[in-house]
Length: 93
Image 1 (cartoon, rainbow, N blue to C red):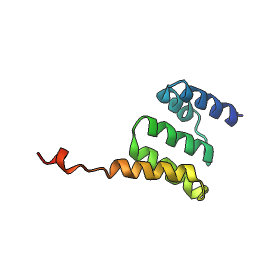
Image 2: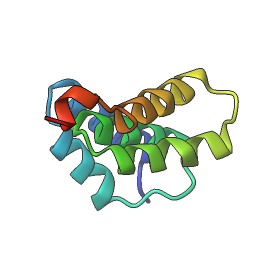
Image 3: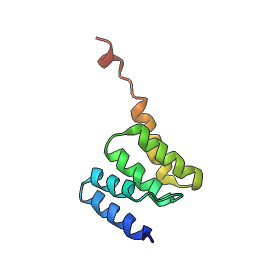
């Protein structure tokens, strides 16, 4: 039997130590289905790794299960702003 809480706590502690790749490996080695907490945590990890598409997918999946969560909405908005950034002077010499 997999102790889901212990896996999540271990991944969170690893992320807090500044090791997002290791935290992601912990979650990927123990596939946990239908967990809102895992979706949100993976979103945070991908956000720290600047993998915007993956992060947006995780937060969107989280919002499907918890539509009124302000944290996930804020992350989605930040990612959309990052992806939508365009500075005409930078890209048009």
